[in-house]
Length: 73
Image (tube, rainbow, N blue to C red; front, side, top):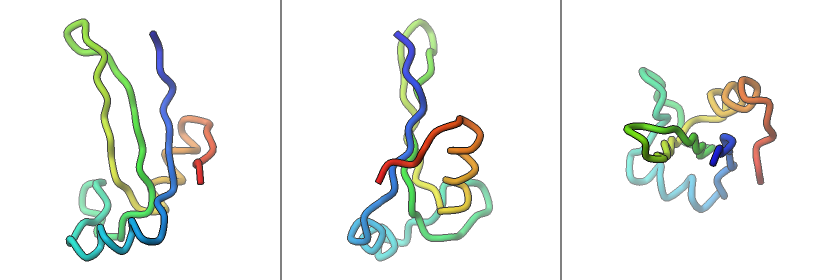
């Protein structure tokens, strides 16, 4: 079973809560506030795994462009 990558824009309340907790973009060396959550499915050792990342607006747009998808509201 193949899963396509997905991206969802966080609600204002989610962004505020994550910012209060000191969270920032998961991309290396980026310290921008989190705005988008992405999911990427992959296979490892015969099992389906998922990678969830919280990233900033710029890196979220790059992810969406790279995978030819729209960011869900």
